[in-house]
Length: 310
Image 1 (cartoon, rainbow, N blue to C red):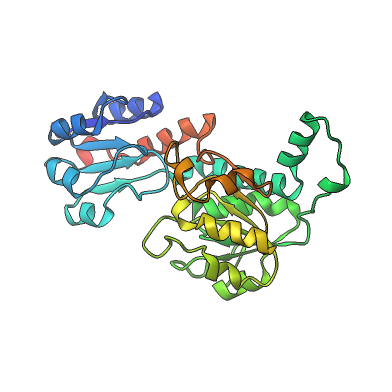
Image 2 (cartoon, rainbow, N blue to C red):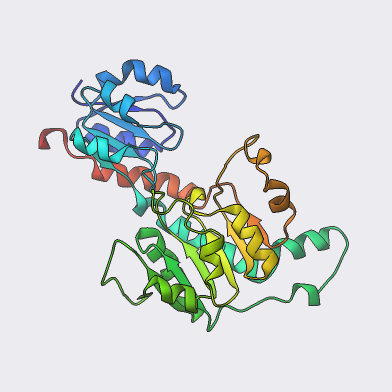
């Protein structure tokens, strides 16, 4: 029991290989339903999840022998971190595994927005050749503002290093993090100088609804907005309002306040979002590539302690 790992989501086989080599027994049940998992979770020392499983107080109380929760990804917002800490449960995530995927995806969204790739492609397929209407912007010389300078924010900044841009970054929970890729600044400087705003922050009580009408009102220049972090950090209605006002030139959104259908289609702003040519949408896949699928599992396996070490 003390060495059993319950895996309730799809992970790369390399995790099981590494865990087994460290003395664990893995029960791989990626199709198990949450209520079924809760019936057996008391028999396990570790739990491996991705996104579908909520590890709340109820789950943690049922998991009498739990010592670790491994999240196959970066964000920990589907885990009650404070209660897990209170119970002495170690939390393991793997932002190192998908930081390159997120950084590249964010750059891709930005370049597509600045050069009207989605609009131009649709026009040509429809038999319309419009060069002037699709004249784009260059990145060189512009200021990119990053909020959140952890693994993801730094990866994005690093990917931008060949574009000859000025990268500035704000992180409420860090100081002294300036490096060769970005310069640490205040939020006031982000708002004053940014031509591009990219979010790389976890979902917390403080970040929920951060980008709203009031926040966007204070930006001094029209911006391109990129969000590859968590959907609830950005109010979609505020983004659409800012697009109409010319304060946002384009938005690349990998995440939304509501995700998946039919719930997404029921939002009051969905039709407007769907029809906007100033928005590019992707289905929460920035960190989910064929490469990161393996790398995330490798990182989790590396962080898992040896059985005899505790």
